[in-house]
Length: 241
Image (tube, rainbow, N blue to C red; front, side, top):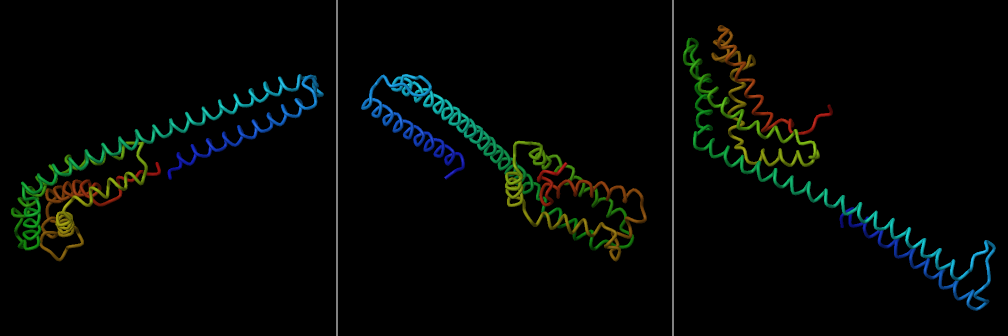
């Protein structure tokens, strides 16, 4: 049972209980003064029976107003929740549709095969394969430069302030599930081969000998980070700022 349903039940039960108690007191009051005289005045000078009825009517009216307001407030909250759920479901549908488009592109362009081929060639570079490395970086940037704007649409989801952290985490999970993990692995391997940590490989040595190649690798790394931000890292979760 939802929290809103529990609230409605609480307000309803409280209203019925108070109203029942008021009616019982009224009946007892009327019976008492009917038995001992209808014109008896209480200490305040009220006509007992008529004023008792008026007092009970006033109390009942106040209780009814409070009950109606609480019910309206609860219904408004429920309507807002339903509207938010509908918007969240719409976002999920949009993301799934965009993922299908992205995966069709990845499959059509054989992106995974291209990345694995680039990775193998980078690993096997000779000590003087400057031109080969330059061409491989160009091929790599063709892939990343296309993927970045395609995937960045997912980051716009994080700008929706109406979504909770749990909802954003769910959206990120949907993205993770639908992206080929082999593509992520291929990007990771390429990033490692091009990094200073792989100084035992010729690719790293050739890069360090050319400022042009250093800039090309830096450009790749920027795109690589943007892609991984969408696929892997928790950038879709709201920051504390």
